Image (cartoon, rainbow, N blue to C red; front, side, top):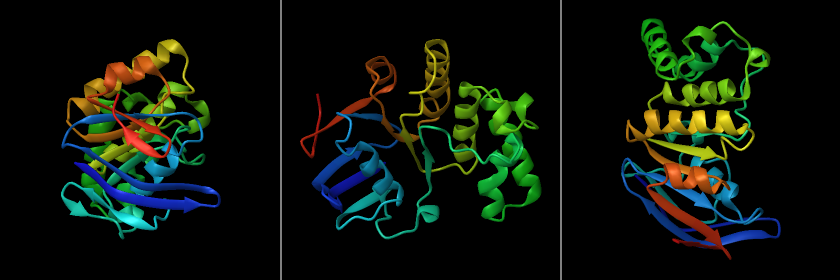
Length: 212
């Protein structure tokens, strides 16, 4: 579950006031809106990457408003994947678990499990510069899934992909995060993507969250 109540934030001349929305447990919510309306800023605030001036953020029933990003149990996938250029795929998948000091056997088992789930088990020794756009997004998704997050925040993860790859990754999302019922907040401009994936649709318009 993701709940945002009366969130307000300001960045220079840009501001959002009194933003509230609720995504029930296991649902996939898609957020749309014009460029520059604040979608990414709102998503990053949920992840703890941007400060807020007021309001509360609740994930899986826990108030995480003042927690650091690493403590929020949110998997964040940015538009470009943001892979570490000098890490192999297997190292990318293991990174979060290593930081949290998981046992090496558990790390190896989880990396294998997630890599198989996402169809990237044959890529574990490759570096990012040897991956296609679709493969990069699979790895970026896998990197957050290894930690079994309470929620996912996806910032236009498919926008840079060609049409065939876009459909492929849409199907992947349907067969992974939706099938596993991971609560998700997903930003996109693509209507096909929204219609295919959304259980709930939100629009950020004139500084307010509305439902179509």
